[in-house]
Image (cartoon, helix red, strand yellow):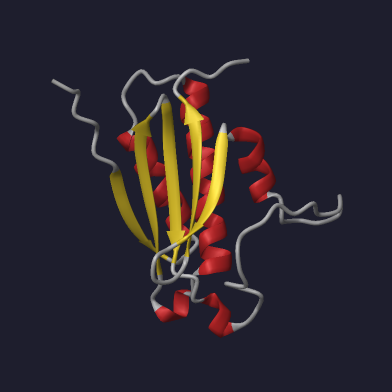
Length: 147
């Protein structure tokens, strides 16, 4: 008989900066005890970056938007998916303007390096449109971290 796969963990958080810490804590609480310190830290960092980006660029706190966080193990990786409704475009301010893309900010810039960090840490990552509205960013880290 085939092994039954693990169910993914799913959380929904308000589109508010305090949700970044809550999301990171949710991931830490869902990981198995004894998981390597480096892998746990990297999963927390990926979570922070992806949730922050979803709140800043794809959701609108004033509209009561929520971001969705999913964690699941598959194919030798822990996968994190963060989705937003992509409604920020209506509010302007450069939000919700399309697919998240890597940026290369100047040395004096104080932000804009989140996806560069994701690109560096993750074994693989992608951006997918949601079926009705919004965007999901999915990133994976292998169970065994190589040096």
